[in-house]
Image (cartoon, rainbow, N blue to C red; front, side, top):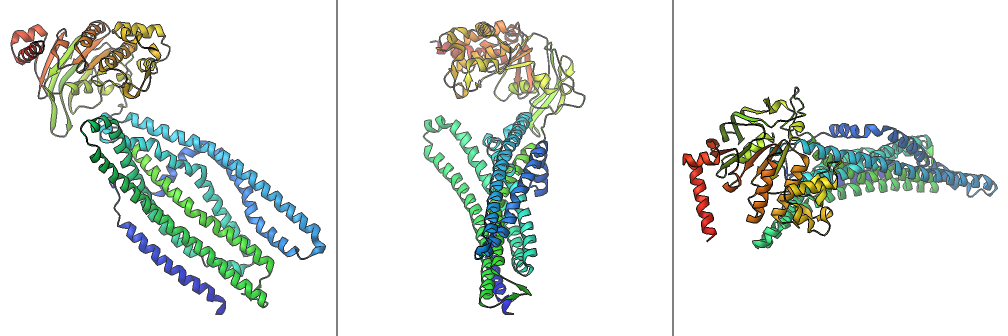
Length: 628
């Protein structure tokens, strides 16, 4: 019975620690997670989908596997060699054999170092390729989402999914999976070696395995929850930063710095708390495993000490010095991977939590998709027809109510009316940014739902009130990656829309640097650049949505002159509050509360003396008052 006393004492200590660990986990369980609406995935599903990304590089992983086997040999053989060396040290007449064994040990160590280097290099290169593929897939999928879906998802959340989360997954392919596989094989190999060397001591070590399994299962559960909380808090703070850094000027204008500071502090503290929870879980697990390691060594030293004091036959087997040395190293090899498992398992759960977020985005089904029988539209004449179109963003709140009109090819049609009457919605529906609930929209006599979305939008050019310019140069913003266009063609487009004069005054001309969102250009200059961008792509249908709303009178005259020239390109659809912009349109459609109330040319509508006449008269008087 005295032989089992060390194991009983260690078991009691481990049991006490296990109770503490379970109580700590229960406290963590009470912490509520954010974004509970997102689907939780099983580990098996996550692994299956991640391995799909690794499949094209399976040859690299097979090569790493064989390299890893060579390095495992060192972990298994070195304790036996060192144990034999220790036994030969006192035998001077066997020095030649001692030197041979030391040389063999050094050779095995050198091979192991080379294998470790090759393994790391192959995994890093392969991991970066997989990481790039995941990022590309996420970004490409986001591009397929509809405007409605993109409006519901904060930009900061999407940025996190494309940038931060794939970084966490990269550890899975470059380190975690291979290390876990290697450690598993090392543990199995070490157990086998210990059983062959001295099964009695091996059974003593195996007594600690159930506790390792228990702690690992409990740690896995709470570690995943902790990592989800960290990911959610990181997404929240990135979303807040993305929005508020873009609106920092407005914050300063309204002197709201203190309020924004308080809001950011709350989110920062939430992230800090989530990370502290994760550290707490990790901080409990690792000491527990270390306790098992120390306890097993204490048992070994206890039995070893008794062996030197008296001729010990533990469970029928003799324990000598070489066995003790070998077992001491084997125990280190056995618990070393398990201790490393704490850190690896923490990183594994971090990768799984990040993958879960990424796959949640990838699983979002685009609301707009090509029909199975959708056709390409190589040429577009520009004929547009609405037939009793009904549309709403929210169920029951109709924005358009039975709208019907016809636009002939190369005709200029303007939509006017009060805010919220449905003007911009009509333009969005024509480009199929949204799908209608009732009615039909025809392009060249074809229902737009039977035309491939990419093919349809290729024929449209949009000039919006808020012109978006990308960081880069003037040339890159006009071309938008269009290949094979000469500088002369670009200058011709700029000349056509009256943008050439101000571009010629720039120091670098077309190579002038465009800062973020084009904030080093005025609103009028950005608008003229958007016109040049449209002209260079020669669209069949041009859409202008309040393109003259935020510009001065002088620039407006330039734009109106440009519009007259651009009428020769194709069909033009205009939304404007300034009636001076639409007076020359072939047809003017007046909307009110989602219905068409009047339509006709400028002169025809004035002659009717209806709502258009009242709107024109009001604007005319306001302009007269402004002019003095």
